Length: 302
Ligand code: ADP
Image 1: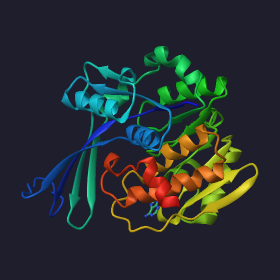
Image 2 (image 1 turned 90 degrees about the vertical axis):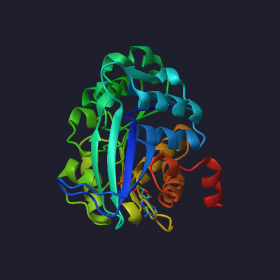
Image 3 (image 1 turned 30 degrees about the vertical axis):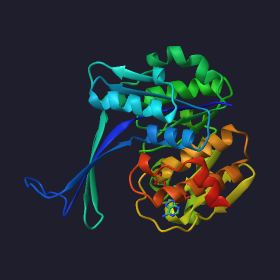
Image 4 (image 1 turned 180 degrees about the horizontal axis):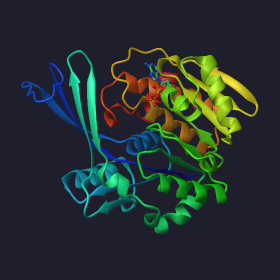
């Protein structure tokens, strides 16, 4: 039972300081950390740490960050042959400022992530064809997403698309999606319905089903999530925890959800599992450092 994740990998360069620098200003006295991030990598790491049989396909640059990432993915248990290198582009970087008040400002240079093209997938055609589930996001070129969606659809592989960051999608792509997992912002952009609560989330999800998506989960942050299928609608509460940093909550939700589905678990139970994993992640700081391992999820649910 194989899950294939395709997507971005970024180095998050985080500087915490008294206030976010204004234009032309230098603010001294901060502390810094380097954290592995990027939606694709976060979701793949969430998937493998919760016990999935996972392949992760991504592209990094021919630089120190890229080298570092390859070692990191190998340590997590991934096949490093699936991490491609672009000789002429830098590894994806997110420069994040966090103020003492908890405000942030983020600049992303996607670099090699945007060089992951359909032609790179020639060696991976069989891997994708034979997977149970393929999980994608929107931090790589849209033509690559569409290309992989075609392979998945033609071979009856379940395609999960986490449509983040928010982007308009064609009806032809939406029709190939087995499960779409937008948050409120993404659901609003895709449907033109202002998603602010359960009622509007349901309207947006039903609209997405009308547009051809098979199943939809709208995630609502601390307010939980809403599942909408041809059989009807069901709301799931979030687990109550003391939130410290919600970075990557959606990524942990998607990665762990995909593993549960790959293993044949029914959607409703898969959502409970993913909600627990996401809740644990918000109690810790950072993207991949906050991703829980299987033992933590099992302990949390017992
Ligand atoms: P994204 O990070 O993509 O915006 P959400 O914020 O909607 O995604 O979060 C995804 C899921 O993570 C939610 O459906 C919920 O189950 C869980 N979650 C998010 N924030 C919290 C929180 N503060 N407490 C508990 N669970 C949370």
